[in-house]
Image (cartoon, rainbow, N blue to C red; front, side, top):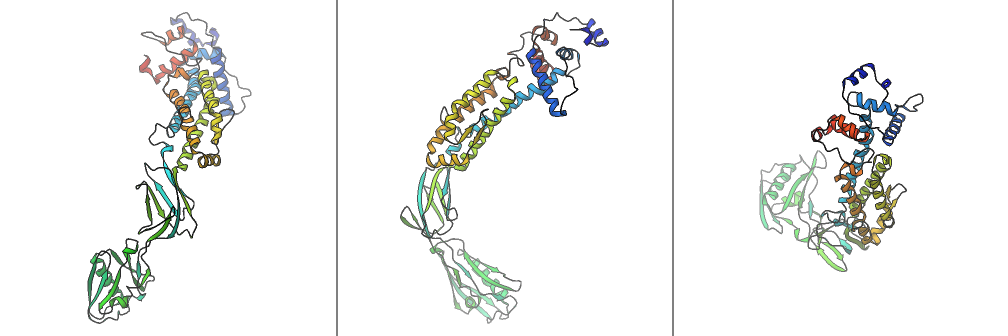
Length: 458
């Protein structure tokens, strides 16, 4: 190394040191790559580098030896090689996680999730639970189940009730039972007082119906009585026994009749007190939303299409990101890693196209949603085989990503930058490493020695 590259102070310090005789350092690949990367970085940060001068190889080596930590080469190593490896690790982790959601060994795999689809969700919709099997049903909803609802007369709240003084008795009959109820008035009560007393009496009877006051305007009100259950068996009635409380309040006026749902399921006519239909021993539950007016509805139980499409799109996106990281950092990555990734994608390419996954020239991928939906409609077993088979997409690309994450850095880093191993010595020092290893090893050792993994080296 030429002394002219050193300052007077550096030459004085060099004379005081006892450095071993160094072999000729010849690592042009590393220096060239770092210089190219530094140039690219400057172009991105500052535009055109016209007029700028890059450091020579000798200047870089001098700075690596003499500059105070962190050295110029150390900074470049972290900036370029470190970013490449950390980007690879992040992308591989995303691929492994996305592949896991489609793995056949995953109990919660997207292919094990089932869902219910119908030709008209406004008429019938449903949900499936664990253990539900694939099936198809034809339904025609003739009538929906409903609960009885009574709405009384609209009365002026402050007007006199028009009932005489004394006890007013009436009978409330529901499927829970029958009770005779009584309300006592002084003879000068308002309509609001009358309806409030009547509602309280009905609610206190606890016969399965609920009475409440409804105020359409600030000065008017009426009594509403409903039952919490639907079906014909939930009907109720109120009749006056002594007095005219039910008649004056209009409490017996029915606006909605209690009735059962009527539907035809696979040509079998069925009634139900509720608008819920349980199938497959409760593993499938349908909810009736409207009348089909003679149009048969197709209800299918099968793979959760939305979950499948979402999981596959996420995996395809993660693989594309991994491909981008590999292509942008080829100079810093092991050739075997690049070749293995390309070989896996090339072998999967024909089958992926069959389910709507298009593979580009640099192994980026894109999911054609309508094409994938078509495969799920017409050949769902093909989609499952391409993705989850032992030689399918999720298994092969997931295993590749897992190996990248778990292997030593030297397995997927280019050997010019990442040495296979550190020197085996009891007390390594920067000088000893410099004397016995290539410049790549020096940078690698500097990365450790500057404090990232100091406890594992010194």
